[in-house]
Length: 289
Image (tube, rainbow, N blue to C red; front, side, top):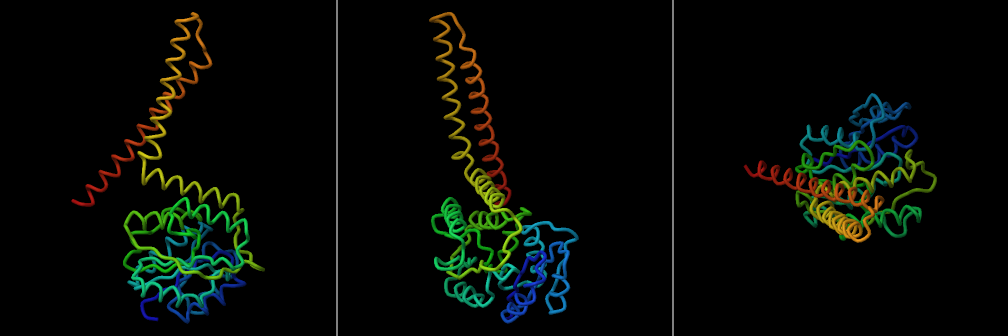
């Protein structure tokens, strides 16, 4: 299909890359990022006719997406599709994503895992929890099977190198008021080596990115108000220390130290909230002018 580019980040996927590339070529032009593979992933993709970008070393999922987005922009695409190279995502769903984008006029379409696919139960629970924490409207923020309009790519290029890039992209989409929808697809897991990252490490990275995004988007809510609560708790504790000293002429050293820590932390939270808020407003002012 003219103007459609399929972007595939790949690391040591020589067993599956050929099938993914060939199936994807039925729906558009294919660009593969060989992210420092030590096998024949890049060579296989290149011989099959895909455009191949090579990283000298393994830089991570986000770094691969960044390179793919920048390469795709050279061709001025109408739509780009991202999917994994390990057969977890079936390229035959690409037309479904394209149709959903055409029918809804959405900027981003996410291929969200369906309730009856092969996703392990513990992973499904984790995905739902993270998704609800980020947005009430999305149920699979972790899915890398997505369609993007070409004219929004510059707005959502990730800076994260790891798996948290999938969340960063959505954060940037929210910040730019882009329309995001989901369509259900079936993901494969059985018999596939779908990740080289330990699930606990993966989950921690994603959660850290979510917290980071919440703070940057709403610093007063997530830093300023907690800071004020901590500061007020410190003041109340300090008053208790003072009144107790007046009453019994004995300093409650432990409580006094805890009071000082609470006051310092409260002030730091409030100062950080003000600074982040000021930086955001300054950036918005510069964008308008």
